[in-house]
Amino acid sequence: MAVLLDHFVSATAREKHKELIQEEANRLLRRGISTFEIQNPLGPLLEDLCRFTDQEDLTNRISSLFYILDHEVRGSLSFEETKDGLAKIFNPPMHISFDDWERMTRGMELCDELEQVDEATFHTIIQNEIRAYIEACISKGMRVTSRGSFENAAISALRVLLIRMDPPDWSCIG
Image (tube, rainbow, N blue to C red; front, top):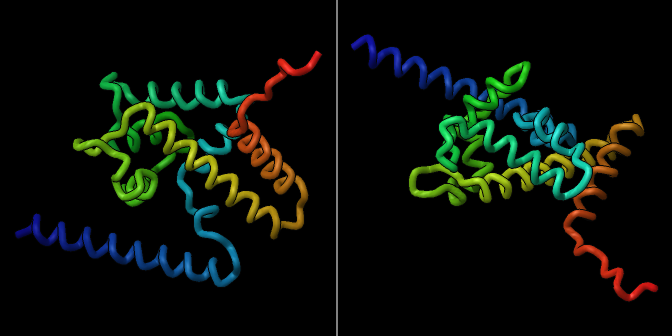
């Protein structure tokens, strides 16, 4: 009986917490602030990854992160592995919820039958998160009076656009 009561109390507390988060999100949206730019739990990681020098550097950074998180060396990551790993390697600890995992994996569509992602899928997820992060920063930068943060976001956006372009064909020169 005590276990059932404990589960009920925990579930009620989680629901209340979700309601409070939704109320705060609505308040921010009324002020024109995207909740993504406020609530993205990967913010510190994404900010660090945005300091890449080229596509190879970004690929290496994401691969390194994958192998750090895949401490069981299975070649795939579950939600629990990702959550626990991010909490351990960042100070202060980075926390992602299952809702965050579902959003990042597009409602689990990117996961395999064991609800895990392989390295290639992890790259896709992180690159999508970087893109969304940069878009949120640009959006925020347009509303911020300080030019520094907007300029940094604009530079990061240009970097992403450049790495997505095909390399130039220099054979026609000279």
